Every structure is written in C-alpha cells, then in structure tokens.
Length: 90
Length: 248
Image 1 (cartoon, each protein chain N blue to C red):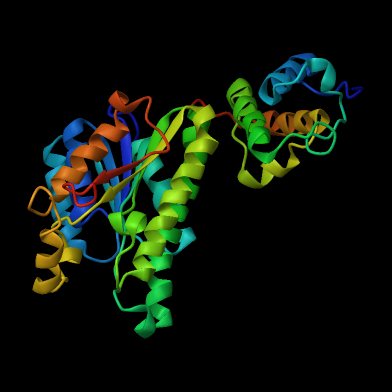
Image 2: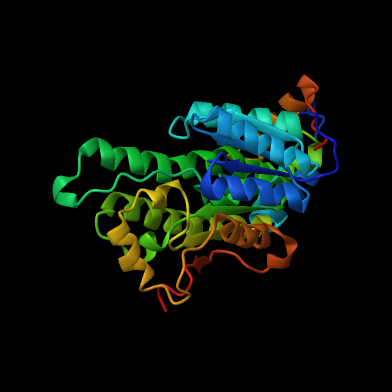
C-alpha cells in the first residue's frame, strides 16, 4: 500500500483484520474484497468494526460499516476517523 | 451522567405488569435502570420512585416501541444518562384476542408491531454496543402461547413464537461477542393482560396448571434477574418456560 500519508501502520492493521476474519495476514492483501475474494460473511465482517474501534479508540457510525470492504478501505476509514480527532474511551 | 458504578439495564414496557416487576427487581439487584412505557405516566412515576428507593438511577420515558426512531432516541438518552447498557429486557407487549375468523387486520398488525417489531427495535438499537464491549445480556419476553399456541391468540402466539426465533438467532449471532440472549415464556401470570380473561377461561386454564395457581410478575422478574446475572453465564439461546407446570 503506497499511501504514505496514512498514520495507520498497515501491517499492524493487516494482522488485526486477519485475526478478526480468522485468516492469515498473507491472505489479507491490500485490495482483496472481504466479501467477494475472502468470502467473509456480514457477521464476521462486523468483527472487523468491533476490533478496529477498540484498537484505535474510534467509533464508527453504522453507515460507515459498509465501507469496511477491504484492508485499504478500512485504513482509509480509520485515517479519516483519527483525522477527525474522534476517540471514544468506552 | 454515567459513573455511578452500577451497571445499567434497559427494560421496555416497564411501567406495569412483568416489566414493572423486572425494573424493580433489577434495581434491587444493583442496576441503574432505564425503562420505557407506552403512555401511563402516573404508573411509570411510581415505578421510577420505587426503583430509586433501591438506590438505582432511573431513566424513564414514554416510547412507542413500534417507532424505531423513538426507540433509538430512548436508548441514546439512556446511555447518555446511565452509561453503557449491560442488560436489555424486552417486555413491552399487548393482546388483542379474537378468533382468527373474526380478527381485524388492525388487531393483527398492532400485536405483531408492538410485540415482535418492538422487540426488534429495542434489540436493534442496543445490540451493537453490547457486541462492541463484548459483554451483556438480552432477555426477551415470549409466552407459553408462542410455544404451544392458544386459541383466540393467533396474533399474540405468532408474535411470541417470532420472539423465540428472533432470540435464538440473536444468540447465535452474538455468542462470539460474549453476549447472551434468552427468552422467557411465562404461562398465566397475574397482570393487566390476564385480568382481561373471562372467569370461565381463567378457571379452565387454572385447572391445567400443575401448581394450581397463576404466577406473579415477581416470579418472572426473579428468572430475568438470574438470566441477566453472571450466574447464567453459560446459558444462551434458550426458551425458559415459567408456567407452574402448565405444560409438562
């Protein structure tokens, strides 16, 4: 992933997403579609949201869940949230 | 404002009957309690006062559970006032009994909308927060009518059977997040709803109850108290009958 402006460590995020999806980090390529390429169902995909929120201390709005479709999109969303300064301690 | 140190519970239909008993029991158990009610402000005020006497902070609001936006507003207000919700109990329910041949469409829809869709709205508005924190419990109120059927209650039985399927599916979805969901299926419980039964019907049913009496809302609340507690930590996806041995 070539986006050097990101504040999110991509390898750390890859591992986090892989754990959530019960896959290996190698399977989580930057643009692999969770649904189409990795055959992740919607319930499992929710696990990504839960883990990302907790790890980065952010809170996602429900419509944003739909953006969690690939590692790249997850990173973009986390970047955007961190950029907003949105943190949630709960 | 969050921070009392007490966990928070959220109860729908909390001003009367089983819901009222659940609110008071959970307050006694050490929960702060948010509850909604349809319209009986006086009854709700009494419940809130009693719950507060047990040391609970109380957040009570009139809510039409058939309205998703109202439910979301209530849940949001409860979380702001009391902090994260740990236990969710859906108790709001109505009856509109009629033989199916005489059932009015509006009675069918009113019962399904309140009992089943209302349960959906409350759970829908609360579940992600429980999943996110990887803890919490949901207890839905079904009925023996939802398990075995009851004549003149096709609407009610359908709604309560729906709640059973809903709760089992929810338990399967949320187990991996450490969230449990169970449903209670009371038999004949002394409430406003059973008061509406004719003496003839009450006597006929009572003859079938092994323990020879109707249950009390407090006895249902005792079971809910157990289900939301850590003592029930390995219990999920179950339909717990509480009917005095009506069906064995």
